[in-house]
Image (tube, rainbow, N blue to C red; front, side):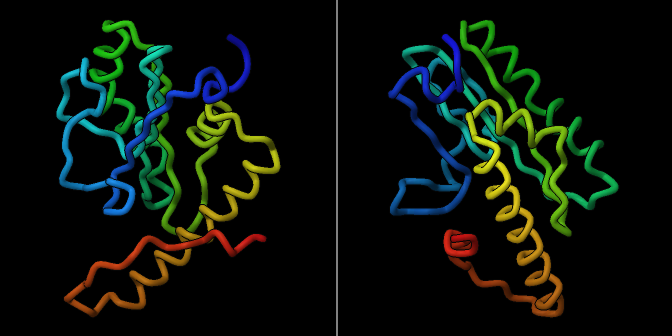
Amino acid sequence: MKGPVLTQTSDWEFVFDLEHEELGHSKSRRGFPIVSIESTKRPDAVIWSESIKTVIWIELTSPWEELMDMRHFEKQHRYSQLKIDCEEAGWKVFDHSVEVGCRGYVNPTGWHPMCRTIGLTNREKARLKLAVEETAQQCSHAIFAHRYQWDWHPRPPLDVSLWHK
C-alpha cells in the first residue's frame, strides 16, 4: 500500500504515556500494549493496527540541545530489542525517537521521519513544530520560575490548541 501509514486502515488503536482518566490513559499501565508482544517497555506514544500488523511508536525526550544526538541514539538503543521482537512476530515497525530541546529546538533527525510516517502535510508539520517549540519554552519557563518551590502539584496537560488559530 502507498501513502501515509495511517491511511492504510481504520482500526488504529493508541495509547499515550500520560495521566488522563477521561481518555483511559494512565501512567500506572505498564508494558507494551500489543497483546502478542511481551515487553515491560512502553514508548511515550504507541499506535498500532492488528489488521495490517503495523506499529508506530514515538519516544519523546527533552534534553539540553547539546545532548540531543546522544539522547536520540540512547532512546533508539533502549527500544531496539522491542523493535526486533515486534519484527520477529511479523509486525512492521515505525520507531521514532523525537527530541525537543528544553529551549524549544526540535531535532530534525527524529522529527522529519515521524512527520512523514504519520502523513503530515508541510503546513501541518510547520504548525505542529511551532506548537511543540512554544510548549517546550513554556514548560521550561514554568520549571525555572518554580525552581525554589519544593512541592509540585499535578497540573492538567497544557492546551495549546488555541495558540495558532
